Length: 74
Length: 171
Image 1: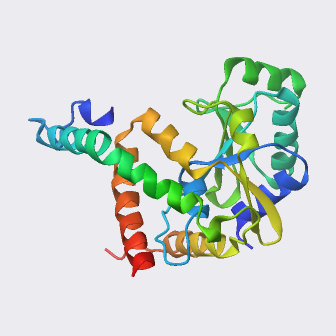
Image 2: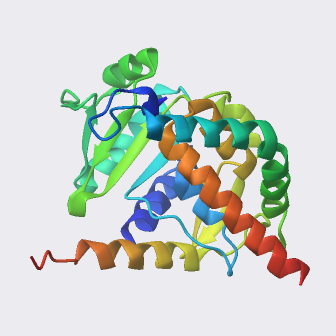
């Protein structure tokens, strides 16, 4: 797990402890509910086999292009 | 047409067997109300089949991609002998293309075999191409097995997005 590595940004391990707490809570208490929602999305009518997802490709490309063109101004 | 779609479409049209996995795969399951995740690369899961791997290189190389593994360029020529060595080692091949395009070709996905996922794949139509994507539930289960901090950030964000989506659908 990356957050266990020593870091100059987290010398006393406060951040690592927070990440560990979120990780434990998510995988212990919230995982099953999350997977229920994932399975719901997988079975969503918009995700049937053969569905047209061109809009996803166009949207993600627009995002990448936007940030590729970003210039540092100072 | 975006470059990733063109490349995935060419791979698919050439008969290369692959599944889109990772955040790119998750994005394809977005509905119209859904937040999309930004990703600069595209992860592809391939079977441990040297001929299939070679076929992928044969599509990518003419498009200007350079194949690398562990930060080093793969030896030329990109032939069946080399593909067999890569499959033996189950090495991840990173294809670096024009405009900083990056595809990671992997033959391992934590917790799953290729054939199992291939049989359960979802094929989406994108710009007229048929793009095979791993089942969403398997992508996230694999991310859990990897257990990286960046995956935890993904999970928490995705959970929040799904809650909002379900709330809207229930309304």
